[in-house]
Image 1 (cartoon, rainbow, N blue to C red):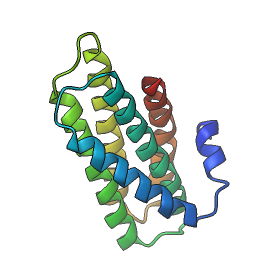
Image 2 (image 1 turned 60 degrees about the vertical axis):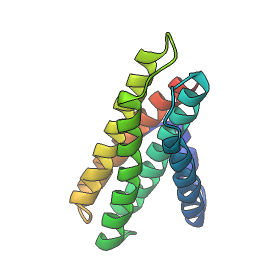
Image 3 (image 1 turned 120 degrees about the horizontal axis):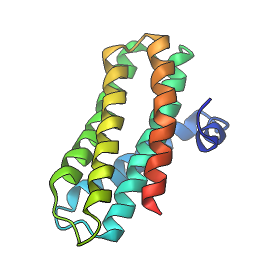
Image 4 (image 1 turned 135 degrees about the vertical axis):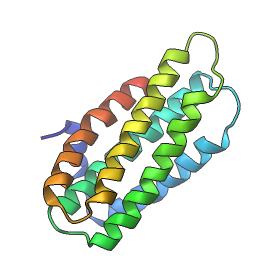
Length: 151
């Protein structure tokens, strides 16, 4: 059921989710501030941010699937995380790139857009456990693909 990376993260205490969210938010904010050319280092950092957002999304969707999140909190949290992913997708979709890495940068942008779409599904169906399970399963491969781009 999902990648080994995400299965290991489920073993953490629920308070770790909040700390992870803060770290993801800070990383995404820093990544979004770089409006220059995307070089290999920026691609690596942005890909790590996408992987973190997808991992956080999987953890969060798992909580929603278990009924451990209110509808209001699910809407707010998924909107916040989805906005971070959408902003990153937009930036990676149009920023200039260093020679030779444009295909990888655009792939990262598409992955970020897919992460944003999953958060939108949670936002639109905040109490639907079946949707949450589907979203949770979708986040695993997205995190894995972003991890590969980060290497």
